[in-house]
Image 1 (cartoon, one colour):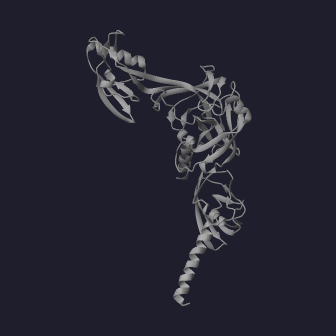
Image 2: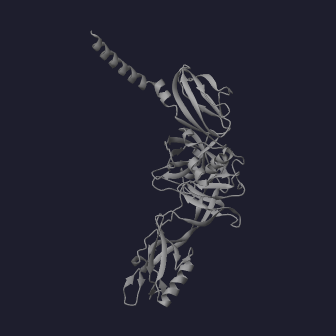
Length: 442
């Protein structure tokens, strides 16, 4: 065999060897070491590599301690969990060298200020007033010649449009629109309508018509200015004085359009009964508002991850009155967990669930967690997940990891949850913490 043949055989052997190593479990574990870690200051994190190899880990001990060491370089066995203890907020790097010599990976470490919140679970009543009047239907006006028309439809207004101004006047109440309609009809003038559609403002002119059947001036529109319902409080952040609830956006029941909140309130609520879920028919909590004068907080935002606003004290009937750590999305694992929710009165109870699937999400997205109710007592009371349970906090290993959002219609024992991280961002809690640290660093 000449030298060129030997080189070809050696090259082939090398390719096969690399493929075998690349598909081996140890190499897969190595590849699973993240390129970036996010940690909360003061919270211990264990990094499981599971490879019987010694390595040298280099860090800035003033930012991050490995296995409790205050040295900047440490020899570790990667077959054992690495204990990471961040001491200060900011960004740093962790360098890993195999056998202390072979550079393997540099992990970017982002440490954010410690964050703890009080988990909810309380059933709350929600009242919101939209930042305008929402078009939810077209009405045919009976006019004098015997025909019927919808002035609003003729003006190009569609279901889901939010009317924000009429003749330059801001409107968010149905009765105010009726008065302006009557005034324009009597004066035989068109109304200048400013409306919002898909987040963009537009204008049109609308001529009210006199309805011979109702004996009143009409716009030919069905409109709504408010909504009310029942949901579950997810968390209260006492340091920031804010809360998060529901885990999903509030939409208009007719148009399924997200409601743009002008103002709103959350109130104490008590569960009176439960219509159990069954396959094909999701159930619901029946509840009534308690002490309507007792307002728990306001509603400032309605986002894909729930409602958010100010709250000045922890509501009564908490399962745990103290704050607990929260988890980033990548910390959530498949396996046992619990939810906090109310099935009778105002008592928050803890029930067992199983996290069946965790989606990898690099940015805010709904349906990040698939859960299955395993608690026999909860299944006997509710049949699984019911309407009004959305927002129930999901707790795993002592940390708040997410919130219940949706039920699977054909399997009510299962449903979706969202990561708590996205709710905390929409509440402004994580953002404020990061901004505060940046201001300190500068």
